[in-house]
Every structure is written in structure tokens, then in C-alpha cells.
Image 1 (cartoon, helix red, strand yellow):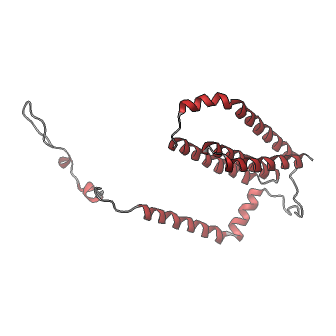
Image 2 (cartoon, helix red, strand yellow; image 1 turned 180 degrees about the vertical axis):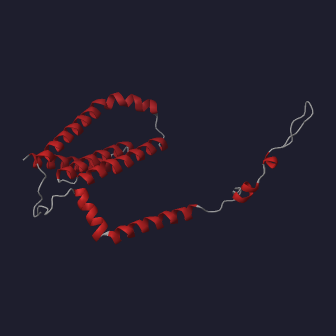
Image 3 (tube, helix red, strand yellow; image 1 turned 90 degrees about the horizontal axis):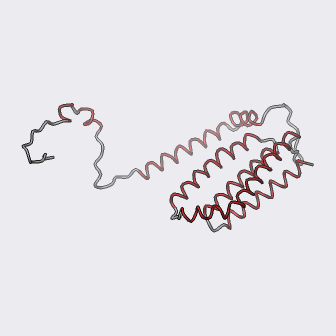
Length: 202
């Protein structure tokens, strides 16, 4: 019973926060609603026993979105004085969201410790292995070629992005590593004795 209640709670929050992510006019608010959606999706993963995917959602996606949030704040023309004034106004709403998130995490831990949610038509695993071990066995045995292919595609995309952005620009002095290595200490410094009242010619 507690698993079903937790599932509907997390599912409702995911749908609501996803809709608010789309319809929010402020991009900062949109990113915050997206973070809330990721947290609730991680709660759903915990309920079905996929702790590894839940941690990936929290660490990778929420961490990356938090960095994106910082970039958005730095790039937008935001009046920080007005932002500080709005902090007090939105403080009750933020405290309410924090309480809801804390209650959801406590609820998810309680539901997970009770038992995992059994999906319709799913069968219990033959071996009592963790989901991380099961994912590793599938990824590095049956899907090893697809995994390697995905890595090669990402490598090619990275090299292509470097090649496309590394174009020659005019007025830029290139680096000559050989000339730098051949440079002697006596060539790097020059002793001048300028007369009094005159500057040094460069």
C-alpha cells in the first residue's frame, strides 16, 4: 500500500514539475522545476529498486542542471538587488518545496525498505544480485559492442567539434614550440644602460 501511494505521489510531482518547467516564463524558475522533476524521477527509480539509476539522476543530471543554472544566472541580465528583495517574498514557497522534498525522500526510503514495487507482468530475478551488478553484466557482455560504438561516436563528435572550432584567424600570432625550446637565456634578457632622463627603447 505504501509503495502505491509513494508511486502516485512521485509520478504526480514529476508530471506537475515537468509541466511547470515548460510553462514557466522565467528560465531560472524553469531550471528549478526541472531539478524538482529529476529528484522525483530518482524517487521513482528508488521505488522500483534501481538505486544506481536514481543516483545517476541525482548526481549527473541534477549536478549538470545546477551548473547550467549557474551559467544561466551569469549570462542573464539579472538585477541581484531585486533578486534579494524577491527572496523574502518567495521564502514561504521555497520552504514549502523543501519540506515536500524532505517528506518525499523519507517516504521513498520507507517504501524502499518495506519492499520494491512489483511491476505488472514482471518476474522476480533468478539470482539475488544488485541492479548495479546486473547492469554491469549486461553492459559488458551482451551489449559490449554497442557500448564501444557509443564511445566511438562520442569520440568522433568531440574531435569534430574541436576541428570545427579550431580554425585559423587573422591577426593572431601562432605558437612556435621549437623556437621556444631553442631560445637561450642570454637571448631572453638584455642589459641596457639608458642615460638619465631617457626611457628604454623596446
